[in-house]
Each structure stands twice: as structure tokens, then as C-alpha cells.
Image (cartoon, rainbow over all chains, first blue to last red; front, side, top):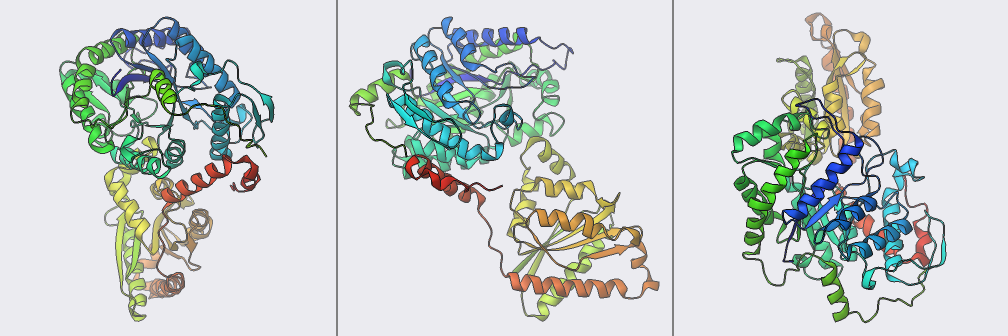
Length: 374
Length: 217
């Protein structure tokens, strides 16, 4: 695998197709998601990421179940999330689930952590949304220890204490899955990623590029500040949203009803306004290539690009066609062009193999002896 | 230089709300000039921002024209906010604008509240709708508001409205002077440094007790 990874991320919404009025069943939506992930591997993409939601109209409430099933039917695809809720999930369960997924997939698992912004999910899982930030900090600190220390004694505010707890199974090759921190708008997430030297993923769909630029710049500066390397060596991922047809006008005509009725931004700005204000690109493959290559102008050389292609009621057939276009016409060009002028010291996109190599090259042991519990 | 922002929520052209806003603006600047304080003012008319305000509500981010209005507001040392009274409250456009401004924009901002209406029976809209909203937004609301009914613009009322404007402007200028130039808050930087503090505390649970009670709501 080279410098950059390309893939897709799925929200997992069950939405009525506004052009036909038909709504997939939950079963159909889940099977469609699997078909889309398998297609992503078939057309040569690198990553499939699923969202996590705990309320209708969304189906992915159990991401590692879905990803494990996909892992069994793929060989190269990296299975990831967008995002895994670090606030309302028990960090012990996250550690267990992703350790198992890591083993089953042969190291093809990583994850993107997020806070979650659906208010009622917090009380449903026994948490308080007003504590979202301290919850994130405490849960993630514990998650890191579970993956890195063999025996964990821990005590905190939000979870029952652990005495003599050992995560089973241990991470594959004793290397934890790579962690991204995903954000739409909060600078705290950039700081969290920078503090630990983890990856930072900017949603890059809902807000203008200027906002993404500011967040990524903050993350890079703080990454350097916290001593993980130069700002341009920080690990950056971006979202993106595209709809393509051979002729740009056909793409606009076909996508407009889905845009106009989309759950997140429908009934607001026009398609034209939204495409000019945000990174959404609706047009020809060439337009998508040019726009995507332009992302580098404001975030620097980066590591992972994920596209959203299966939402707002778009039929499975259409999503698969979008994947064909991505795999055949867009991503091969992006791979080649993004390498042009990319300085050699820019890190490659993270993989399990690379993390194993790094570990063997530097840190002699992952076991910490310090007792940091009070 | 004292910078004033004036938000006018009038819907018609010409608008009596804007007329009132302009008269208050002139009176405030007259008081400032008398105190030899140089001042400038910028009017934010909400009507042309109607669609951007609704789009921001639906998408979560402002268009460039709305962002320019946010910047004007955030850079101001004081705000004069004027709305027509609709159905016993401010109009929806006025409320929507203040619903989409970035958090803490009005924090510690001196605000002079004013409203227009068909009759004087709605005058308590200042106390029941505008004052609580601006207090909630952490603004410092000037004690004297101005309500102008249609009749107030009539000749037979003499200079009663003018006198009220003069009195409210004088109170507002006293407030502006005691508050002084406003420190613009950088919530972006505040969030980052607060997060760093939490992370440093959280990665050393031995001192973790320090976080208890640090989270306020």
C-alpha cells in the first residue's frame, strides 16, 4: 500500500428513495451495505468504514459484527468505523471487540473515534451528554491502557473500577489498531488526536473547506507541539461526498432529488449553493478528480480519503455504479497524482504491518511498569 | 474607537424598525461624541439575510454573507438590537438570527434593546422577550429599552419618543463607557487549552480528583 488510502464511509441510513417512494427494509439495507463493502474491495479501494448509530432510521448499531462479516469475505480491505462512540460505549468492550476484529481480519482493522451528537444516546447508555468531553478523555485514556498494558488497575469517574484486568485477546502482534479521531466541528477532537499522536479525520462534508483547513492546521500545529514530529508528519484523513456520471449535467439531474430531500441538508440551500460552499462534488469523474486533488492545497499531503456514496435513499445499484466509476476512473488517477510532489518524509497511510515494523524498530516493549492509578 | 453594531429585524422597506434603529444609533453616537469618544456603527439588516439564516439553521454552517454579519457583531463593543413585535414576542427572523450566531458572540456585550409595534399595548415585549434572551446569551442589557408604537411617530405625540431615545442612549453610553473596549473571546483557543488541561489531568489519574467539579453546566 502506498502513501494514501482511498475508500468509502457509510452512514447506514434507511431512507426512502425520493424518486420512487420505496424504502428498503432494515434487512435490505444491511445486505446492501455488505454488497457495497465487497464492491469496494473488488474495484480496488482500500478502506470501508461504517457509522455507529443507536436509533432508527439507521442500521449499524453493532459495527464490529458487520465488519467481521465483511472481513470474512474480503482479503485486502481495511475495515474501519466513522465513528465509534467513545463516550457511550464501554472502553473495555471497544477494546475487546476491536481486538477480536483485528485477529479475525489479519490486522485489517482500525477505528475512528467520535463523541456522538445524538442527545438521547447518552442517557440510553447511562451517560450524560454534558460530560461528553471528560467522558471522551477518560474513556480513551483507559482504552489505550487496555491495549498497551498487560494487567490494568484502573479507577475513574465514569466506569466501575478495574483491578487486575487483562484484555483478551491481546491485540494482534501486540500492536493496537490505529486510531483516528473524527470531527465535524470541535477543536477538542483535534487536540485529542494531536496529544496522543493519533490520526485526525475531518468530516469535510457538512462544512466549508475553510473550516476543515482551520481544524487540520490546528491538529498539525498541536501534533508538533506535543512532540510527535513535524506538523506535516501528522496523520490526516478527509471525508468527501461525490456523485458522478459521464456527463456532468446527467449527474446533477440524477442527484438533485436525493440532495433536495437528504435528511441532513435537504430543504435548505440549493445543490448549486451547497456544492460551491462545501466539498460536495456532483459532476463528471474528471471534475471529482480535480476537486479532490485540490483538497491537498488546504490540508497538506494527507493519508486517507473516504467518500460518502450510499446515503439519502440512493439505490444499491446506483451506489455500486458509483464504486465502479471511483475504482476505474477516479482513484487510479488520484493515487498517481497525489504521489506527485509528495515529499518523502510524509508518512504513508497507517497499516498494521507498518505499525508492527515501527514497533520493532523503536520501542523494545509495550509493557509499562509504572503504576499510574491513584 | 467604539464600534457599534446595529441589528434591525424589520421586514418592510421602508421599515419603521430601521427608522427607530437609525434614530437610536444617531442618539448614541451623539452622546459618545459629547463624551469625546470616537465611534463608528455598522447596520446588520436581517431581511437580506433571511435565506442564509434559515440555511444556517438547516445545515449548521453560515454562508459568507452571514459570516460577515457574525464578524461585525463579534467585533463590536456594543449592540443596538431592534425588532418588530410579532405575536407577543420578537419576530421569528430576529430570533433565528440570534439562534445561529456562534456561541459566546454576545458574551459581556452591552446591548440596547428596542422594539416597534402597532400599538403601545405590546411594549412589555422588551422585558418579556428581548431582555431574557440577551441575558441568556450573557450580554449586559442596558436598563432602559425603547418601545415605539406607530402613534409615537405622529406629530401629536410631540417629542416623547425623542426624549425616550435620548434617555436610553445616555444610559447605554454610561454602560458602554464603564464596560470599555470589549475583549473578543477566542472560544476555539479556549476549547483547545481546556482540552489540553483535561488530557494532562486524565493521563495521570493520581491527580485525577482535580477534574471533579471542573465541569460546569
